[in-house]
Image (cartoon, rainbow over all chains, first blue to last red; front, side, top):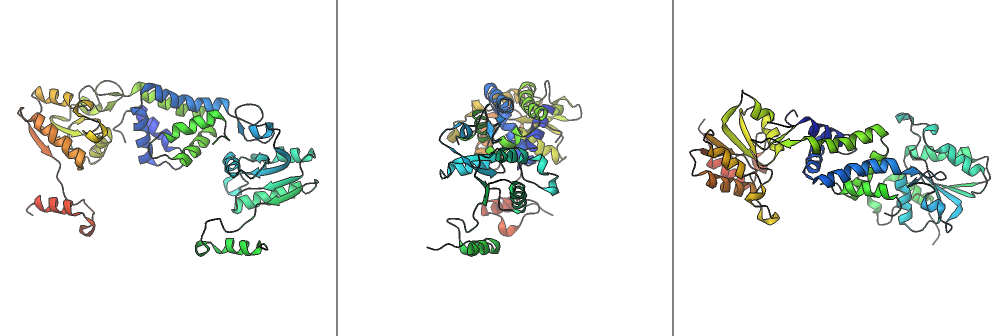
Amino acid sequence: MEYFPAPLEKLTEQFARLPGIGGKSAQRLAFFVLGLPQEEAEEFANAILDAKRNVTTCPVCQNFTAGGLCPVCASPKRDGSVVCVVASPRDVAAIERSREYNGHYHVLHGVISPMNHVGPDDIAVKPLVERVAKGDVKEVIMATNPDTEGEATAMYIARLLKPFDVKVTRLAYGIPVGGHLEFTDEATLMRALEGRREL
Amino acid sequence: MEYFPAPLEKLTEQFARLPGIGGKSAQRLAFFVLGLPQEEAEEFANAILDAKRNVTTCPVCQNFTAGGLCPVCASPKRDGSVVCVVASPRDVAAIERSREYNGHYHVLHGVISPMNHVGPDDIAVKPLVERVAKGDVKEVIMATNPDTEGEATAMYIARLLKPFDVKVTRLAYGIPVGGHLEFTDEATLMRALEGRREL
């Protein structure tokens, strides 16, 4: 790859660092950006700097916000007695899209993962405990992913919240809507059977 | 997508404009960049600006260069009497990787494509003709892609160069090394038969 000028190689390297972007894609993206009009390339660069500069985390729920409280925490229409604990702001967006949930959130920004050297102090567990300790929260819904790390994180936090007068629940497991029984793994089917409800 | 602060949405949009990056991937990339340390995010933004600022095209062959002549045109070891015409700087890199070619290049920066409103004046055809008109070039190898547009562009340029005392050749068609006859399309097989050589 010595056939391109250094600034182009550098840009390619920057793209190659992004998750899911391999060497060939990175090169294609770098060429694309190089082919953009000057203003549009500047817009791209500024969008990066702008996001870094102006996106902060909500002091209450730790979700991303453009300064101050996040829209959910600031809304008088939302029920602050229920807190849904998620791993990432993207999970907040997913739940909001369902339009079913009217409570607040707490974003952990990660899950406990000893394999990746992520401990409880590396994610936003402490602010959650402090929030619950204040006594306004009646229910905490653990909505971390249903994988090993998400489970372990949910269990760990549930244990931490034991001393407080708060109900801790977990999202239901089961077959996804629109899914096929035939292609559903055994663990999920087992959980779906366990969690069966009367019609 | 109203659940993320505006600067984050904007960054996501910028990523979504890139070729091959859908909405979900764009979001993932934006989150990744937001999670980078400040210096690294700045490095990324600067790489974009830097590439736009410092990458120019070689005045002779139109390939990308970091100012002045490109390394190939500047090298005294390369044979300037042979010019390989390609559609993009990436094709130059591909040919250079084969370590078989010792001539010069000419980068068209596109191919003629009436469907996409790209005419001969939108790509670097004129600088090529001027280069050949000077009389130092003995052979022009048309190395555009073997698809409809690449073919048409090669034909068009070959006709333009007719008046000059220059040999115009085209890359050989045939079965790719390591390929399977069984899975080779008829057009390629036909060309491979046509171009057969004595052993």
